[in-house]
Amino acid sequence: MPQRHIAILLSGLALTSLAGCASLVPHGDTAVAPAKQSQQALAQATDCCDTLATLPYQPLTVGESQSLTLDTHAPMHQFEDGASYFQAFELPRTREPLTFKLTSTIANDQVFAPTVLILDEDFQPTQRVASDKFDYLSPNGFAGARLGATFDITPGPDAAYMVVYSNETARQGTTQYESAEKVYARVRGLALPPGPDPIAEHTATGNVTLESESRETGGGLLTPILGTRSHADSVTKTRNATARDEQASPSSASASTPDFDYRRMINAALKADDIELAMQLAERAEREGHSGTRAWLAERLRSVSP
Image (cartoon, rainbow, N blue to C red):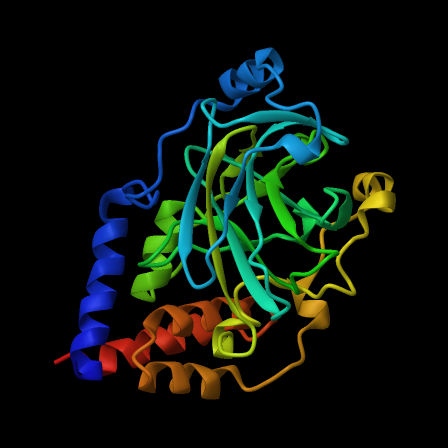
């Protein structure tokens, strides 16, 4: 399909999904309980397993996107840093480096703030991607507001299993996100309306998407854009992680991201018919001080319309 028609179609989808300040929750997500109710249910839930070795692990297939529903029907375990609903996976038996992208949907002023725990072959924790490594990602025509992180893991004796859960420290936090009115104005290239943005409470339940791919064959332009990228040698070491998590401040993606020509990258994304990437690049550019990038992109999209 020509770029002109794709741009029109995707821009139309984005505007349609935002019209009337409609819910930005992806259709595939499952409704979850209100924050207070889910926290009460968690406190009353029974631990599914005596040890990490007895968690219900699912095989993880590289190259697939999986929707994880962390609700009151999910298994619960009392982890070292608190009780949580969780999903657990057995990593593929390969030593090939893998890239994982984890996103958690913000809906109804609440969000599940994930922690990722990596276990060795003996089910001992070796690595952790803490909740403060997840960045806020603005809504677009493909997804609602969400938290997201991208990280690399090389499966092997020291990385055989993965657990997605939350902890008590993370559930004390909140995330400010963009209001539906501001999203609509941004997509249309209009002046942003005044007023504070809403606050999402970190809760015990939520919807999470887990994607994986080979680092050797995947990544591309998406890799540095979709959240904080944590390599195995820089992931928090679990045996000393609990105390550090409580003292850690949110990471700044812009502090470690080198400056580059965002408009050139956006042009490349548009030529590749990747409107989603173009919008994400514009958002990152604005956060790093390149004001006017969103309006410039909106003008570019309008210029391809008939």
